[in-house]
Structures are given as C-alpha cells and as structure tokens.
Amino acid sequence: VELHLKPIQSMRQHQKPLVFVLNSPQPVIWNVKAENLALRVQHIFHVSQGSEVHFKQANFSLNTEILEKTLPQGNEHLLNWAQKKYRAVTSFSELRMTQAINIKVGEGAHQIH
Image (cartoon, rainbow, N blue to C red; front, top):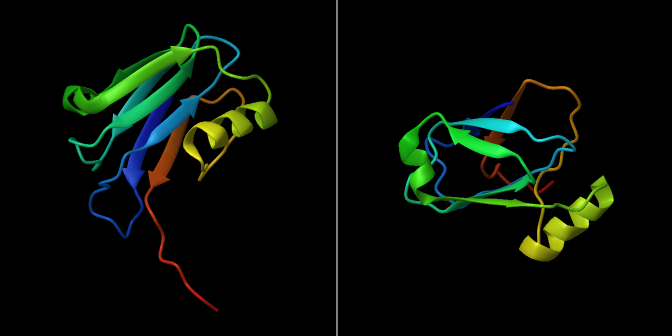
C-alpha cells in the first residue's frame, strides 16, 4: 500500500513528530513517501505483525522508529490503545482494499465563532 504523507497547504514543512498506527489483518508492505516533513524529527510507525515499512527517501528513515507488534483488533480497542499510549488521536480511518492513501499532516488555523 502506498502511503503518501505531506503537510497541509498552509505549511511549507511539517516540523513536529508524527505517530502512525497501521493495522491490517493480513501482512502489508507499506511504501511511505514523505514530502516536506522535517528530517531531524522522530517519527514512529506501529505496524501489525508481519507487516513492513519501506521508505521512498532513505534519509527520511534515519530518525524513524518502526515497531512491529500484535495490535488490538477492532476499531474501538485500537483507538483506546492509541489514546492511552499517546493521550490523543487526531485522525482515524478504516479502509478496505486500498492501494494508496494520501494523508495531509499539520495543524489547521483555529477559528472562534
């Protein structure tokens, strides 16, 4: 599965650490293409047992930690696990039979109405 990461339009480069939890009932090879994400920032990828993460840009992997483990099954269990481990979840998606995922990372402008 192609995983394309890039900042939201209002940001030239994303500077903060990111954590991805990539769970699949079958082993998956995740091909990550990171665009305009800071290289010296620690990123973490949790992947389900038997899955792999490959990076299109070798220099992106230098500060990236890949943790392969048995992840909780079921959306609610997985979401609870992630919230306990990292205190917050900013995005959650369930996809079936996909070949490519595009994710825009960053913080949008906060507006008060």
